[in-house]
Length: 35
Picture 1 (cartoon, one colour):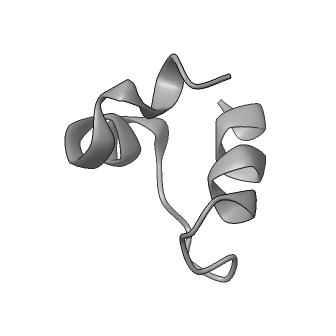
Picture 2 (tube, rainbow, N blue to C red; picture 1 turned 120 degrees about the horizontal axis):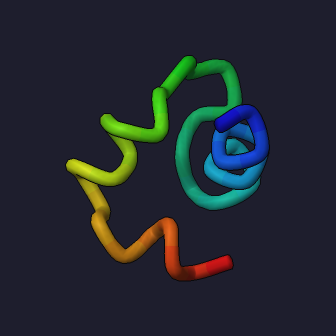
């Protein structure tokens, strides 16, 4: 799951925000398939 955090910090989310994969998936859903 750490890889997902690295990638969402490189997207448009605040890199300082600790967002879990579940939270990211809940917010964006398609973010996981974006890789």
